[in-house]
Length: 324
Image 1 (cartoon, rainbow, N blue to C red):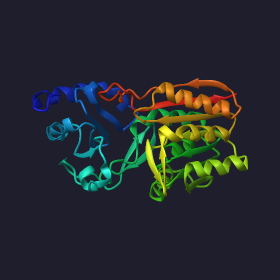
Image 2 (cartoon, rainbow, N blue to C red):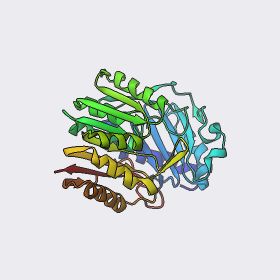
Image 3 (cartoon, one colour):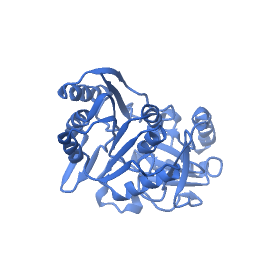
Image 4 (cartoon, helix red, strand yellow):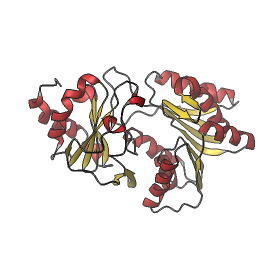
């Protein structure tokens, strides 16, 4: 979409909305607009119930945001928020400049907005920073975790607000362990379990570094039937940092070391420079290092409402392995 071509907005949005008809049958949280594939280079629009968030990935797309927000209200959303994800050093920018707490158009969303996905309920916070509390690109992976968790101990690393934990619990996991460095995210995870009428019994929430936890779990000989690894591309760990490029191999190795025979590892990354082939290689190396063998290896596709950025790179990559 050219920045001055607002006349095409209604048709582009209507076409994008029609393409998501099947997705809307299973969730109220989905990607309505995904970059160039829907005619909006450098932009995405995620819908959460009756509200939406526009994310900007290229500075050149910024002039298109205001007309897009106006076009979304009220047909597709009662209120629209804006999130800035342009590649730059965000540490020196005010939080309200990066993710304004007020909507750019329409009315404010509730402080805690509840959405549904395959019958599960999750809270999102549209006025609380860049991340909303639920990543819609992991919808299919959550469904997979739910399907394979019956009777299993499930470890959810970098658990954030524990949506994978909720999926595992709904699928019949006998125990879950959720590990994250954010106490606030873990508290929201507890609330998400309760929101789904799940007891907190048998579900542990650990405010801890994932690599430190895994090293200790390996020494203790702990074993899990399902391990989920979905780290940020880059993060801080006290005085240390975590980098997918540098640390994912060790993370995958440690995660594999705590898998029980027949256990499953779901390895995920949205690091731009990590290709699907590289992620597969890291997981295969981790399994070999652990002295295990693979019964099956799958590479789950991205949900149909998520296509790719305008550079042709699929943002989210996943590998699901089952050990022999």
